Length: 430
Image 1: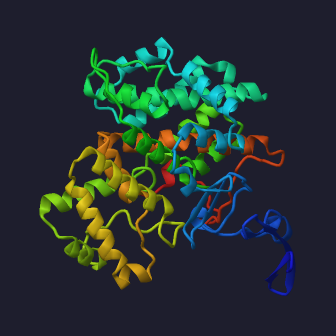
Image 2: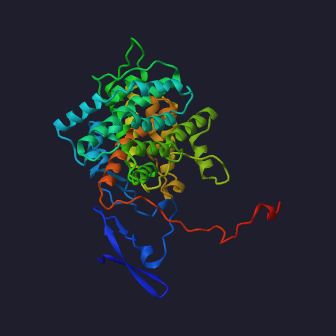
Image 3: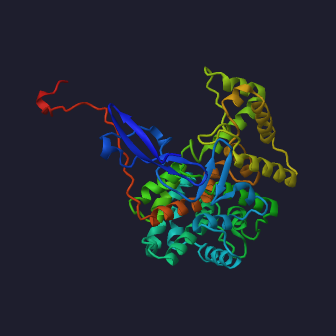
């Protein structure tokens, strides 16, 4: 198999190296294209451009495969442990018992917010978007932990990573409490990661929220399934900001801003709002699919199709099963789950969706599951950010440790006016 690609421009040919990945990925190395030809490639949204080599996450969109450091995502479902998955992504291997215990202890030691940072919540409007609070507060952590702005040794990096992963759930829970006008509940050092978050969210003075194992496992699963997903919008943002040698706090805060968008982290909110509209309006699932196929109708079916997956999103399958288990445990009925089940059943049997490979994605069931846990809709994207944080940290570190890494600086093709002379004010027409 050749290791070169031949590019022909006019009567000249150029040899470009071919890079091969572990699982069959191939890419044409165009890093010297402009130097050799004076040209650049044009690839809006970078859908066909690999911006890095990474050993963190592998996706095969055609087959519906997702692996963290080589491990299939399905193998994390038996005893879901978000902290273990976070360690794997960040440090490149599954932790030993001692390593997991040490990392968990670091999370516990860093779960409190500096009182000065906590007091800033008093100046935030109660109706402020939780994602705005999360982004601002993550950035503000740099003010209270300046010793971690330069992470040039392994110990300081581990401490900074532990602070971010631990404090992000406290920041998120405090943001929720602020929006409800409720007193802050401090973290409980005796609780595990997810149980502690739910405790800070839902406990009230003198009445602690008791987390069932089923709910705790489900939240672990939600966070694990969102922990990394290759070079998506928010991860690419973290890498772009980090390429300027910006600190880890600033880079992750930028990732939150990118995740905030409804086309990225806010997609499961769109799904829930769609299901609620269907339920309120008394629309049948059959009618919804008919409207979704009508290009003249404004109705849009959210939660189907994916930029990368051209098969069933493996995360959606796991979350569907988890939703069934949680509702069975709670002995509760949710009409939105019934609508979602029927929509999926009909879509998978409809040639329109099958031919276009529009299968349920991770957003289709994640919102229903979070809703079952009592998480309000405006906190869905915050939960996504908590889950994605280990991936952002892992990607930032990988880029930071790469000696060939350069500041990300895309090119453009200019389509504005040609050279034009400046016209003095008195000579300009009205």
